[in-house]
Image: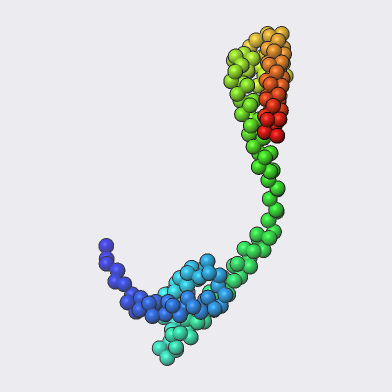
Length: 179
């Protein structure tokens, strides 16, 4: 593999004029967050077009012209991004943190309730009241008699209502105590 010699002429040009280009871009209104990238872009163009530099031309004038075009491109790009951003729909309002916390607590309550049920009652309750399946569908899916599905569902729902009532009672007691 051949050894690539660094382009000393370009490296010297870069080191001598980097600060000048950076300051010009800043004065041309390039945002601080993109200033280093814009400076790099100027020197990419310089490297690509260095054969265009005439011997009698002032290097700083040539660099200024390239920097001005890069700054204009940066501004156009920013305006395009701003227009696209402004055209985006406004995100839906997020529910208050209290609502999210209440939903998480309710979900945890249901999970905990389901874990306490035996498997037969848990499956019937989950398939009916969570998944929305009908009793005949559950009977077929679990390969149990339809009356067994109704019996398990009735008992699981009653247990759930009692668990909800206990939870509400505890919640009311806590409100009174911490009121």
